Length: 250
Figure 1 (cartoon, rainbow, N blue to C red):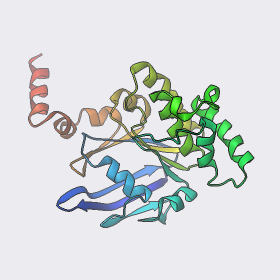
Figure 2 (cartoon, rainbow, N blue to C red):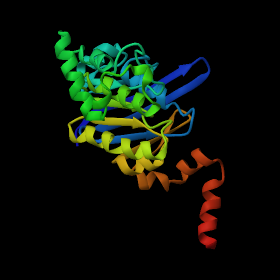
Figure 3 (cartoon, rainbow, N blue to C red):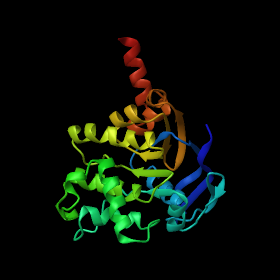
């Protein structure tokens, strides 16, 4: 598969903290790829570097072969690379429809066009019945859907989803999984940061694992969850050996 996004040797430090260290990865066009890792691994920093919210110290970011390294987020969005944020901050005084229309204005000049696009996107993410509700009245799950809708309204080729399932209960997660799956069937390539492994196992075709700013594993969800380096990164030193010994004893 052709890579829609390619990251080559990306590094970023904040003072003495090396948040991202020589990261190289690819996201195939038409895929749903997951980026996982323990808290503080550098995942959100990597998203910021990819999308232009941060400029890397070293390395390059390529979108469909075009070098977009350090390019402003609004320019990248116009090219088709859009991201969501883990902490959702809608325009609280505006309706759901008006919030989504903000994203649509990236490509649509007239208000009536943007509002019509907002309705299309609301249907896509299951917010049809809440279009005229103030964004401040939405539940956590509703706000997560709204954050996704605002990004989708920009007509992305590549969507970076930052923990879109965080804070949801099991039923809400189960309801959100087909929404995310639907993005790919509608032609959007997705790279998602996610801690909910149930969702990663259901959704991702391939998984990259980041720990302490470095990539430590890549493969299918099943492969990476059985990787000793991944187990150590999540559960601590010596855990993989103890689990292996327990399996042997059993």
